[in-house]
Length: 113
Image 1 (cartoon, rainbow, N blue to C red):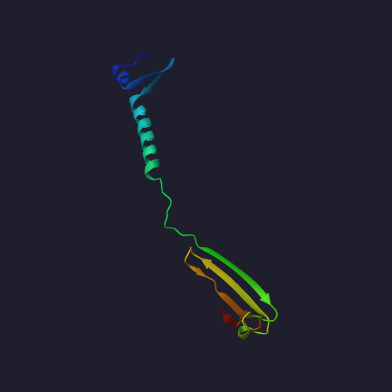
Image 2 (tube, rainbow, N blue to C red):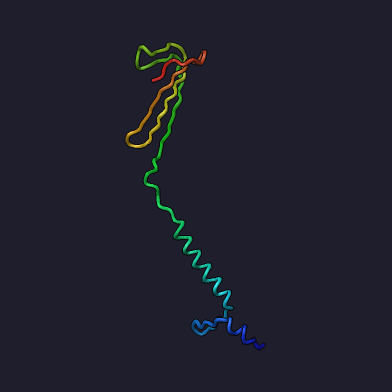
């Protein structure tokens, strides 16, 4: 099948080893453009790790007691109670550890330390 002069002029012929590859010029340009854009976008959208981000740890525990005992005698309830301990740690200098205590009978707060 004979090719016209215009079609032959728009075809690139590549010889790699013993094989000859023939690509139309516009397909070769699309392949090169696609590879270029892929590599460029991969490099341009790469992100560095944020050194200013801080990890905040949050922990909690709940316990029930039948006598409302407290390590500080003035804060002892003497009735069944629920004790909630929380720990919020936001780095080297920030830490918050509240203790919430509630009476089980009426749900009123007994003490906050």
